[in-house]
Figure 1 (tube, rainbow, N blue to C red):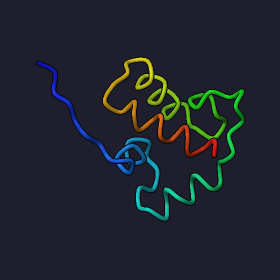
Figure 2: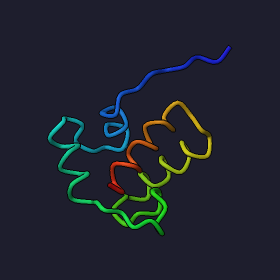
Figure 3: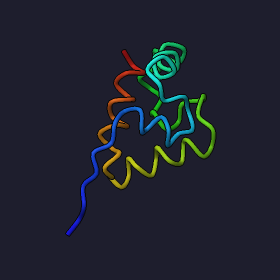
Figure 4: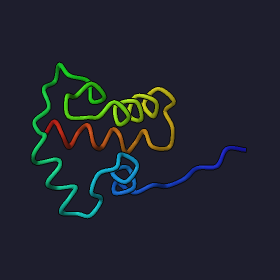
Length: 78
């Protein structure tokens, strides 16, 4: 039986090694948007190679993080 974890948006930022407090999250999103529609989230130039790999793997595996990755994608395009 597969266990399902419910992560918070801040948890994704922690996984990415970014500030995970509300101000840190807001500052990151504000400074990196709008992300052009032609650029895939994991290919954005502001990620380190490790961050890009984490995002790519979570999207491919459709892991329990995928919903949060989708939320981040939407926030960066807004």
